[in-house]
Image (tube, rainbow, N blue to C red):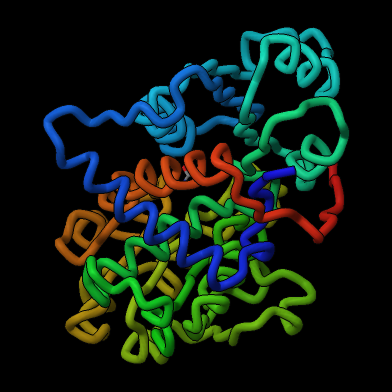
Length: 324
Ligand code: CP
């Protein structure tokens, strides 16, 4: 079976193949007709049980640029609201002939379950599951870093070797942070997580990265600083940090950005809480890659669909817990 469930499943060669293929796909976006005939006659289903702007739209754009037929499914407004299960929803999609299912789900482990259930024959791509993983986000982040820090023609596979990447904020609830730690370390980068102690996951000691509570100390040693949103929707209201206190200790404003090396970039996966983890001044500055990340997401998702439907195997050995 050919799936993309976790960044942890990717070898360095897999990751570099996806990044290099995405570079080829980006060239398609520069053409007057931004379309390849590669997936003509194939069907990609976007199965979204959780809200999304960037991921859902970019998977749709990616599939359409490869000439696939696209079916968009949102749990809201579907028979899921009448209690239909993941299994029956999957069997319904299978009956309609899905070659690939792109799934976002609030339960960690749902894409793994779908890929290993026998309910569908097609490839499964994880578009974000609970607090577990968001592998295509990590891939588009690595692609953006490679372009900004190394250049478009890097292509050696050793291009993020030794780069120092800092990920700041709500690590506890962040599937983006988890996928980035796996992928960036596989690519040879050094990752430091910075967060309030209450937003650091238990067991982080076993992750292949450092943890710091002092943002000002880490910034001058960073090649890229990735700011994360505080995910209030996954928190008990009693544990919300106040906006003022959070932004004072862990927010990125113009003064803090000035502590970063001149070449260093600011990243954000979106959606942003302007005024909380990042000021408008930083978000709108030339050093912030948030909009480039969105554009690069289409190239990465084209590469993933192209490789999976063409026979690449990035199969999952990891069995995440289904938490709800
Ligand atoms: N970065 C990201 O996953 O954004 P969406 O939730 O809008 O898809």
